[in-house]
Length: 210
Image (cartoon, rainbow, N blue to C red; front, side, top):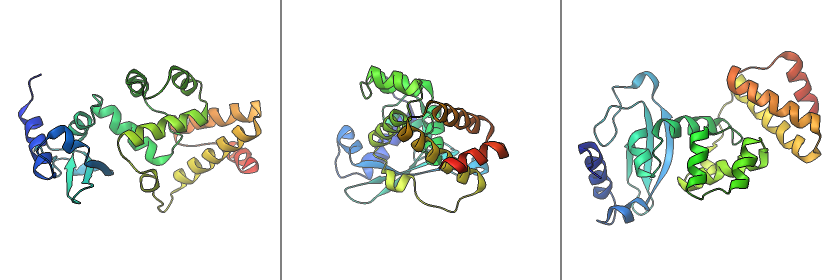
C-alpha cells in the first residue's frame, strides 16, 4: 500500500518521540490521553502530520511521557480503525455516557475484528444495556483509554444531569428486570440521543424510579 506524505510524516513523528525505531512496536507505547473538539478553532490546531484539524487527540507515550496531537484521520490509521469520522463521533458520545450507542459501522468493525462475539453484536442491537456498556469498554480498552480518566468528573450542565439520571434508570431497570421499565428506559434514552431533552412528565417518572 502506498503511503501519503502526511502518513509518512505522522509515522516519523511517532518514531521520533518513541523509544524504538520500529513503528509497529512504537505504536504499543502510546495511548489516547484526551480528546477535544476544537470547534471554531479549526485552522489554528494541527495534527503532527501538518493537517489542520478540528478534533484533537492527545497521544501520550507510556515509556517517556512524550505527547503528540493527532487528528481523527491519523488517529484512525494509528489504531488500525479505518473509520476516522465515525470514531470521533462515537468517542464524543461515549464521553457523555458509557451507555451511548456506537455507530453500526463501528459495531461491524468490532465484530469483524473478533473483538466482540456475534451474540454480543446481536445483544447490542437489541439494546441489552449491560452488553452495550461491555462493548463500549472493549473499544476504549483497545484504544488504551482509561475509563477512570475518560469519564472524568466535571461540572454538569442540565443535559449531562439528565443523561446521568437516564443511565441510573437503565441500571435500575436491568436489576428489577421489569419489562415496562426497560422499555421506558430504552425509549427515553433514544429520545434524549436524538432530541437532547425529555418532557416534564418523563423526568418525573425517571426521578421516581431511581
